[in-house]
Length: 160
Image 1: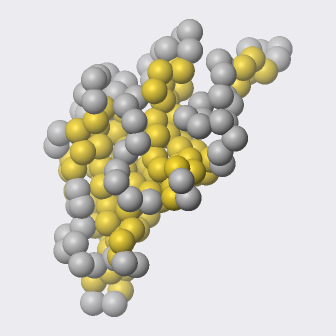
Image 2: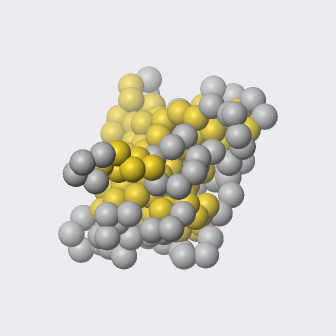
């Protein structure tokens, strides 16, 4: 996976490939820009036959991997936002036995602080996480969770 930016006259490549392993597929790419318009990218990448979630930040000189793989099982549906100082927050789903569980993580500057599963009931299927950070810096996570056979929207203010 490669990232380019428009200079006003042409497309300029930002560094080399972001893939952690050459010649693997990537999917579900998410991009956010910090206050200096430097991209942060989250994506799923093949890791031995299952989708693994990774995040990298453009430093102005090259891509910095933010830790290693997030989560312990196959990941899906990543969501990405930046806090008020430009640190990434990600949310995703991990599935086990046909039941999706929602997780979230915040980059501290050195490592990921992970929370989850965040399902109201970990036995219920949860999908489609979405993240937002409001003007005062509070992070809010929304997802859908099966409640009595119907998917209902759940909201949680994240505190890391």
